[in-house]
Length: 539
View 1 (cartoon, rainbow, N blue to C red):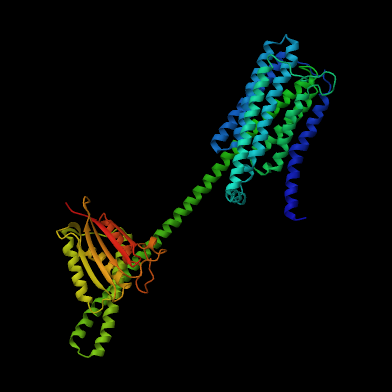
View 2 (cartoon, helix red, strand yellow; view 1 turned 120 degrees about the vertical axis):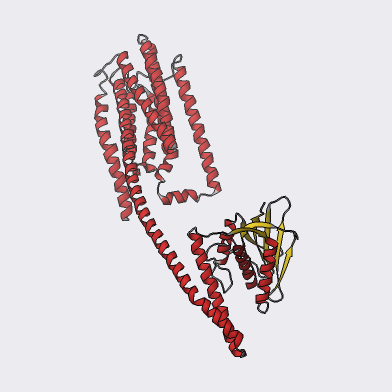
């Protein structure tokens, strides 16, 4: 037999021994003493006080359980709370009417057993509903069981819905039945409610006894005892008290005899144990909550320390990148200047080719350092814009002409620009930064186009909107779907073999700093992609 099974079995056996068997031994002695019916005879007034205490205790329990249900969204507690609430009302009616009719011996002989039965049957029924139907929600606190519940199919969900409707019908039926018993007890004597000729004088007590036994059985079958909350321990002990109360009450021959009085004491004692359990559970919960708060505070302090360390590391990283980029830029300028000077003076074609390699890679390194510096400015919230009002059409024309003139021998595609609004489009923006964005768009488009393909630069102003839209449309291979959502993120690179993934990230921040919007999408004809941004038009 596996060790885990033995441990589980021992835990369950130990729990049963501690709280069921030991309690039952003590209560069995009381039940044996209660067979002497004349040992303790009381009066209707004493009976009233027994029930008054029971009513108060049941009311307190109802308040506790319903409050617990509302706080924890716990249907288990809700049904038990309903059971105690209705039982308290029945007990109040039961004791009051009995006191007012203390001289009507015949009436009391049947009214008291019948209304006691009504209260007990309702409470035991609510316990069965709570433990059988909703105990799985309590015992399924482990992550494995939660995952199993989450993996239920729709057919199982429908089945659960049917079961819920069945239990709701059960609740309604028990409520109507108990109410009918209480009301009719004022006028009707039920058959066999009290039988004088056999040892079981009150056979109706066997029905709630059976329900209490069912609830106790399912308490262990559904493994509620595994919950470490002391409340559940008090609940199972109170159920054992109720079971022995029903056994003893079943052989009560006359109202106010020993077998009649002892169950009232056991009922009140069971209620009191339950109240103590709930109170201790509340204290236990508050202690755990306090411990959790202490652990949470310590965790927050550790997180705060780690966060400060991360911030310091980020600051050091940014400072290093900033210093490195500046240091890299320092030798680049003379390399470019001297290379251009040598290129213009030397006529040797082979040397020209070598100089072109130097110049091309120096420019690439310069763009990289410029991008790194821009990223540190963006993340340090120090990206500044030198805004001025100018004609956007003119700026884009100058950028494109300059772009074409400088790179006409190296262009991999034909650039076509289309100004759909020929008039002035005045924007209040940073001229150099917008040029940087357009260059990034064009560089990105040229990476994915060939000599036979075209790039369109489109400037448009939609009617009724105070915004201008600038688009760069290529006819290349388009943007892979997996890259598209994170295209403007830092270090997000496409299928291109070149680039750092910083250009579009910088462009996004520049445009958003101008209160504009930037996006990219594949063309509807599935040939190439279009990169666009908007800018507000100046007043």
